Each structure stands twice: as structure tokens, then as C-alpha cells.
Image 1 (cartoon, rainbow, N blue to C red):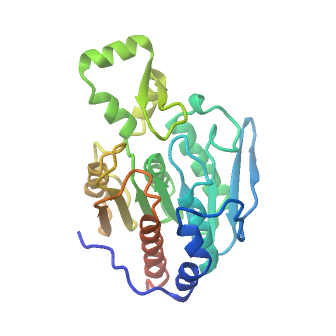
Image 2 (cartoon, helix red, strand yellow):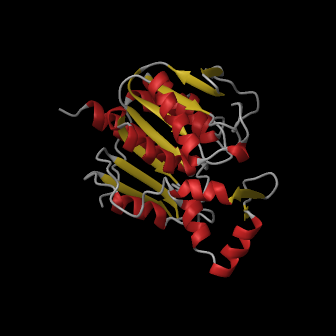
Length: 290
């Protein structure tokens, strides 16, 4: 697979990197820095939890950021992308899934199916035209599900430490005796340094429901451009998952970028810069297609 060409910056990207984007990419961004930050709004749905979101209006293709499990729309990648999209004049949407961040609902009552519906609702109601979906960790799984369900609204995909099928495959990789013990107990405790408690708990019902959304066992019917960025030092989600996604998608335009020192969150300055360059390259590709 060919490497993504990190070509020279366009005017908007140059401004982003030389002005506001420099602070956005810094791991020591000053507290209280609200440069051009969008305001939190809430999307109401009949008989369903309200979803918190931030949106910047602009031209197509738009960008939609999908965070990971237990994360929210205020992470460094999500905020940096907003400043980048604003600098280029493209639309941008970030939001919290049910039970995440500022949205209503309870995290432990959520499922992959519920969060997939969240993504589709937000795409249907709050975006116009084709979108570049940027999925981080579990968001990388949800972006695939959304692209399958809404091919007409999906212009391209960018996965960052994609955790496609990961909850299910990680559980199934445990020794059979361990799985039986956990099934009898009714829950699985997964250690994680990204949780305040130091672990995440998943019910067997959550895992069984997640199985309905696994996509790596057969060809993935996605034909748009796909870019997959993963760190070789990711201790949470193995980098070979991104390789499996690349092998399964039907798109002829797929690139995998492996960062030797990249970790799961991919939030170092150079990680975010690579993400921005990759999306900028896709925007240029999509807007110059004949």
C-alpha cells in the first residue's frame, strides 16, 4: 500500500499550523484557551437521550469526529480538528454518544447498536453533503458501521487506533475457562489506564450485542477512500486490527500509516499533525476529483 503523500500545505492549513493550530497541537495548551471555540448544543430525539454536540458550519466535504469508548468530544484531537476545519472553511461536527460526556444517558447501559444509531442520527440531522468520518478507537469501529449504512453521506474515512470488533475479539481471545467464569459472573472487567477507576466493566449482554456489529469476518462493503493511522506501541488496541480493516474493505484506495512510537491515544503534537495532514490531503483529493 502506498504511503499517504504529505504534500505542501494549502493556505488554510498553513494558517492553522502557523497561528492558532500551533497551540492546539501543543500538549501543554493553556487552560481556558477558548480560541474560536464552538458552543455546546443539544439534539433532542423523541423518547431518547439528548445528545450534546458542537458544530461549525462550512463547505463540503464536512468532517465528523467520532470519539472512543468512555471519551468525549472535548479531547485534544477533536478540538484540534475544529480549529483546522474552521481555518479551511469546512463544516465540522463533534458530539458525545449516549452516556458519554455532556450527553444524557448512562454509559454502562449503552451498546454498540445504540451508539451506531447516535452517529446515524447526527449525520442525518446535522450534516449536509458528503462527510469525512474521523473515528478514534471505538469511533473507528462506528465509522465503518456508519459508512456501510450511509454510503451516500460518506466521502472518506480516517481511523485512528481503530478498535474495530475489539471488545468481542479481545474477550474471545481469553482462555475458554476464563470466559466461562466471566459468563457465569455476568461481567468482564478490562483494565484500562484511560479510565478514572483503572478499568472498564462490560456485561455479557453488551458483548453479545456487540457481536451483531462485528465486520472483520467478511469483506466490508465500503468503497470510499480509507486512511488508517495506528501506533506500534498501542497497548490497548493492537495495530494489526487496522491492517485487518485495510484487508477487508473493498475500497481500492486504502492507506495504512504505522507510527513507530505512537500510543493508543495518538495525541502527541506530531500525531495530531499527521492526522491533520491526512485529512487535508483527503479534502484536496475529494475537491479536485473530476
